[in-house]
Image 1: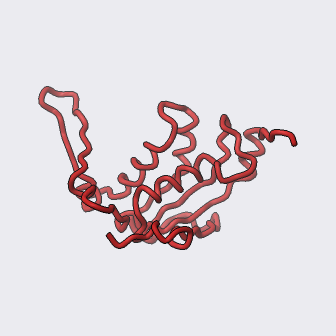
Image 2: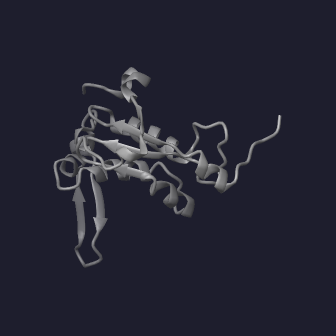
Image 3: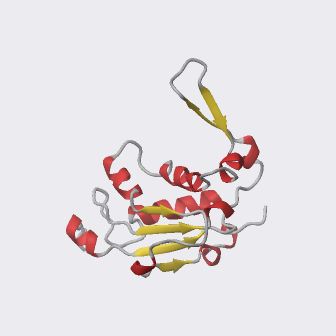
Length: 157
């Protein structure tokens, strides 16, 4: 059997739109499934050096679940560039803040290949919205129900 290596033009024709509802879904499991869909690893024609993944729409980002004490105990640090400019936030503060969709975007970004132009192109295919509305109805996205894939994907605590 021959190894399949598709071209970027063939990959662009095979792109689909997928809609995922993040309401009650565990963050890490959601991010790993979304990252695999963006890379195209679920397709039999997966080619590592080509953007052959799908376009993914995630709605209800503010209702994603973070299990255990990770919502309050894990801390994200960054530096502003000024002396004494170390800032920190917890995932709970991010979810209740102005941009809760950044929690999912950062989780998916951290599961992609680091410092890669291909990963940046694939992340451009991710659209995350805080509520149930999205402007991509014209693309007729296919709904992917993560709760039905595995019972652990939708956990109560």
